[in-house]
Image (cartoon, rainbow, N blue to C red; front, top):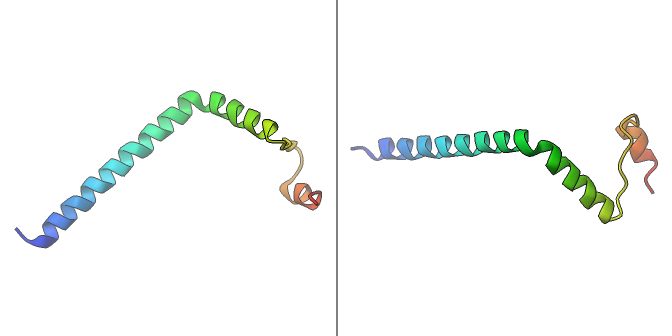
Length: 66
């Protein structure tokens, strides 16, 4: 066997593993998305951050920062 074919096989295996992990992450975030969003919101509040009003545009929000 040539060395190039083994290196190509390794790359294909790597791509398959990355695709499986990405698919699993999408499924997990789809199932637990609301819970994750609530937990992150709670963490931001606990750390003293403020939640941005969804009607405020990003540029307007950034202008108000000191």
